[in-house]
Length: 351
Image 1 (cartoon, rainbow, N blue to C red):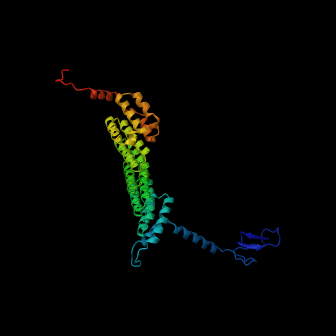
Image 2 (tube, rainbow, N blue to C red):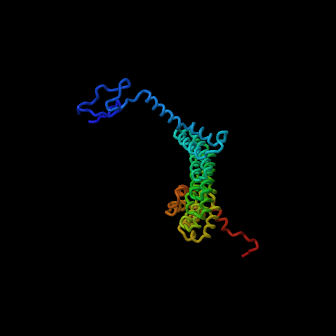
Image 3 (cartoon, rainbow, N blue to C red):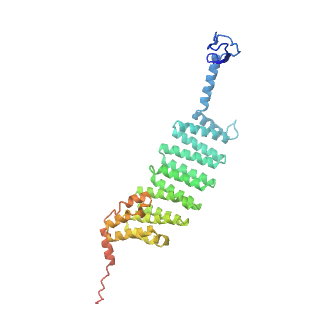
């Protein structure tokens, strides 16, 4: 029967099954076991302990950064820059800092790793590291750097000829900034849409347009929200997405009405009716009924149309504001309409 001795560190053949421990267990003061195995000495144990300590030092992010920085600088003993080795060290250091939640140092390390990948002609990996740097900047609440890093990541993806990831990077940046810097967020959403449209992928931009409109509504910038919805409708028209196009037109009209800008809503409706698919759609008819109810000053009719199934099939942000219509005094609109319909008195006409 073979049994491993934890005390001796060797295997021994025991002559009897009931024998558990060897007689005369060896230690540092005893000779080798009968099988020839020598016990570990204290010196050996100290040597192993030293090895673990060296390994721990090698994974220290601060030391990795220091070593990488030296590899990127010329000196009397180093006549060329080793970007490959330095970039690997920067990547290790960045991950180490991130795990330790040292976000400022992690951000700087990811920036250096991104630059290293650029120097190695790898813009895709450089973009990935730049996105990681942006994530660290978000943790620090540095909104300007968040926008700058995501924009840079987008540029690097464009260098790879990849419009979709380039747009996605801007979209990520916009979502990260919605609470901290909403004005910058809508700019990034708009830039992301432009990239996709330039690449002929208008349909991929629909959600980005909706997100931008949602942020504008949150900021109470209703005219901007309506404008971005019209842009969504135009993008939908380019890819023959008529249903999305008509929904976007109706949404823009509802936004103007929510802002209690009846004249602009009416103008928007008249412009949209130049598009035949909208004029003959459920959304077009719904918009016409809604404007007629406003012109008549009929609050109950406004509420009824606002809660119709056509409106209920719009985006949630539009349904939410439509349920609050009317937002102002619509009786004044009725009086204005009556004045417009009155014929002016002609003093020369005696009939």
